[in-house]
Length: 151
Image 1 (tube, rainbow, N blue to C red):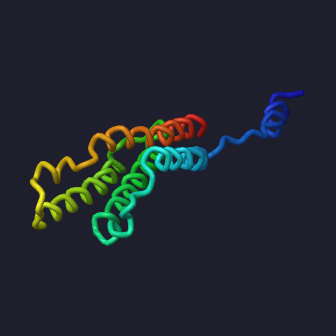
Image 2 (image 1 turned 180 degrees about the vertical axis):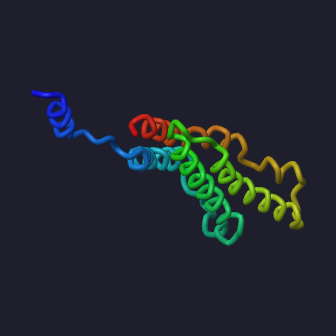
Image 3 (image 1 turned 90 degrees about the vertical axis):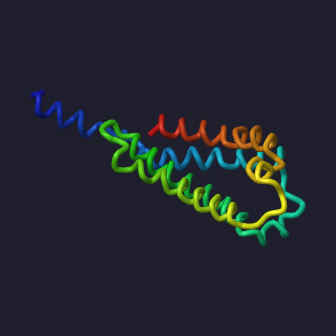
């Protein structure tokens, strides 16, 4: 057997194909999302006044900021998962959710309110948020790291 034939035989025998990193990340995040939802419903549950809260424009803004942050973070993570990648061309994507937050906070500060400024800044549920948000995001972090490692 000559060298060229050996190379052709080895190349033909290679049935393994690396899974695209986007697919691995998507599957890992889809597997972790129900765990985060389970933690949400077990730890916090649905607000009793959710129908009243839906009429507040800032209720929808929470979902918009979350989706903007998730989309930009996933796009930047996929880009940075390549060895030759740099943050220069994709780093500005992370400014999109920050810009949405700045606009929302500016709008909130311009509205007349009955509560003092410090209460509006910190809120009533700050301690619950400080424990619940990291607990709910931990499965997604583990899933993302696992997906990036497998891809």
